[in-house]
Length: 121
Image: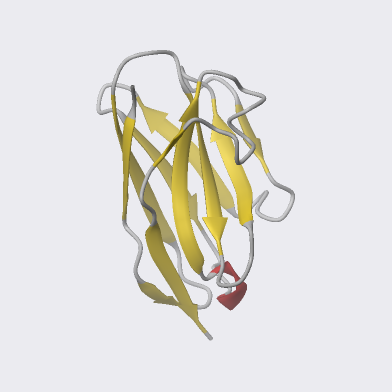
């Protein structure tokens, strides 16, 4: 069983940077991913990281702007977001799964409640 809690979302201006954090509880070698969901749209995969942090992957839409990291001593997985755009406005979710193939999909097993990010123009 894994519990996830996102934090760090807020209102920012276009061009700003923001760091989201996902606090994870539980045991196991879980992959962790970040997704987002904009109003009226489906949940979109952004990035994922292996259980020990040695492998990361990104959606093309955020590659070069977003960076995923994890600190297993603190049980946190962060998403650093730079050069934010109004189209980045969404609820951001972290997710965990034992499979690296599943964690990048909406079938991933565990999900947090989400944190709202709003980017004004």
